[in-house]
Length: 194
Ligand code: HQG
Image (cartoon, rainbow, N blue to C red; front, side, top):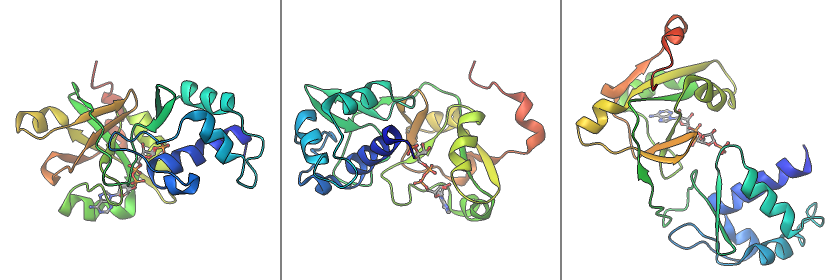
């Protein structure tokens, strides 16, 4: 794997799940308690990361194509994906009618009976279009299935959905009645949110 991607994945892991790797913690907004310069210094102590400079981290944070990170006053955070329970980021509410969730075929029956759950993370993660959902589902082994979520109906019923980045939306839980399993033949009906 390329050095840059390796570092990006490590930063995601630290910020979302395990800041203790850098002998520090995140606050309730998800920001790491040490600044980027100190992050670089501590990363260099890890085997395989002796090359990391502050600029390498900044470049990854600023150019991440999925909007994974944010930096404020020299401190960094992940914007979604957390398993750390105390992290409570203030997201804006989503203005979107339809969302998608990419998963694998073997999970579908359970999702249809019990709904979409956050599992180990703090939120259920959703995509604004089918292409994105396909990438998410495709990370896992097995046939990808795309679920269509009626976000407009959820909102009408008082259930909240938030926007974490241009490519990632979040919900606490999606009850089965808002979930529809998509068949390949209906994919051409997209785009839905224009
Ligand atoms: C499934 C990555 C059985 C769910 C991605 C998923 C995303 C259920 C898995 C982001 C279930 C959880 C998050 C139920 C949900 N029964 N299975 N009731 N409810 N599931 O990794 O959405 O590149 O926590 O379908 O691209 O796959 O890292 O969620 O398969 O944006 O930035 O349980 O992480 O972003 O898996 O991925 P995950 P996810 P990054």
